[in-house]
Length: 212
Image (cartoon, rainbow, N blue to C red; front, side, top):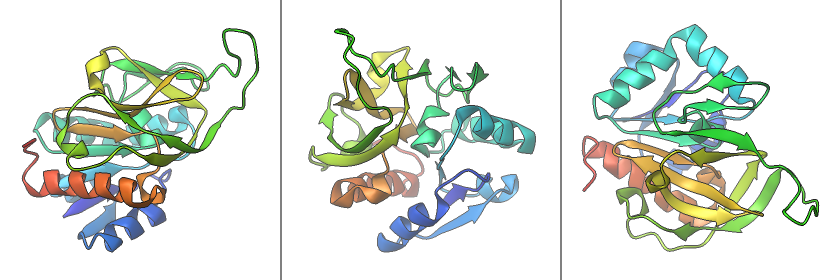
């Protein structure tokens, strides 16, 4: 059973519909005790990093998520949810994150090295390139996925980047270490490729977080 963390800032409908299409049982909850019982958790997110962390901290979900992952149980962050996995963000001033992966979240500058301006947010379909092996990428072919974001992760350890895209610069698109995973794009809106990534995460969860 997959638990979708409901903290008031998630794209709950689209994620839940994706799990329904995969015929994977799930529930939505903000209750810590209920979420702890899940085989795997999904942390969705739309909006500001600071606002999201304020809500997670205020509800006690920050500590619960940290304890859950420390116990080896799998977590997947989607879009803003992926960014929250990192140590900090500069969005709306400095904010600390969940600190599950090393690195920080910064804004696209909107200007390249030649001082040519480009559009922010990064919005639309862009290609994934796989650069590190992971069970979440198992039997998945490189292709296009759907992004909408103005901020991106700068990992403190490049080994956590499993797949990347490019938008003026390298954009970590799929990240992960051990039982913690994240996708910067919207897998539930990214056709068969996104659905296969979600399927792989649910398979990892069904195996108790085992990576193989």
